Amino acid sequence: MQTPATSAEPEEGLWARICKRLESHPFCTVFESDLAIVWPYVDKERQKRFSKINEFAAAHGCTATIHDPGIRVIFRQVRSKAKRERASVAA
Image 1: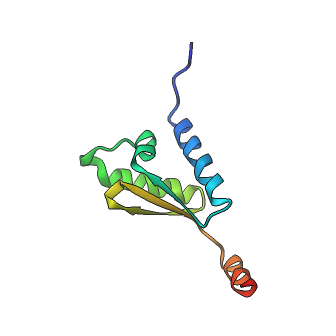
Image 2 (image 1 turned 90 degrees about the vertical axis):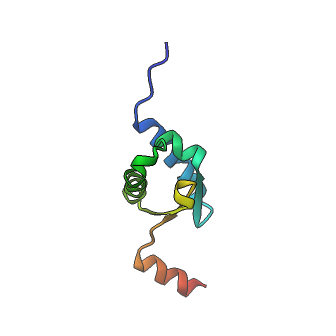
C-alpha cells in the first residue's frame, strides 16, 4: 500500500526540476499545470498563493516573477554582488 504524499514532497519535486534547469539556464519557467500540484488555484486565495510561491522561491535563493496572474512563474537564482561583479569582469 502506498503512503499518502506529504505536502513537502510536491515542493521537493518541483524544486528538483527548477534546480536542474537553473544549472544550465539563467531562469526556469513553471506553468500552471505544475504550480497547481504544489499550490492549487483557488480564486479567493490568489494573494495567499502568490505569497507562498514567493516564500518558496526565497527559501531556495531565487526570485519568482509571477506572470499572467498565476499562469506561469519564472524562477531566477539570486546572485550575490561578488558573483555579479565576477560575471561582468569575465564578459
